[in-house]
Length: 132
Image (cartoon, rainbow, N blue to C red):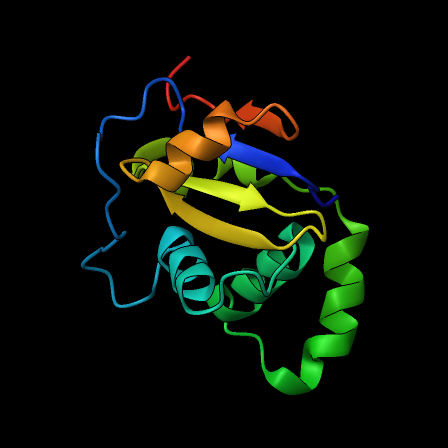
């Protein structure tokens, strides 16, 4: 499932007022770190499905020669949407999907975040809360 003309706002219980780059002390990158890296390096390149698949490949360290079979397996399963990502839940990043479904990170403290939040011609969704 991909989003089009949709802005995922930070969650109501996000604890930051300025966006933060996800960093952990783990040797293996976290999912949030990989999502951030891909979206930061390639704004407007990935749809939600493409992004989640690339994150899956990197996080699970799946060899490139298994990409085709892994993609078919990955897309056949249902999975959570980007509203559950730690980027808008904990790190203060909005995620904007344009009319082609391509994703871009938007810092919560930016004018662009406020502009997108105020637009009437796009769908706006809150990220899931971290706590119930």
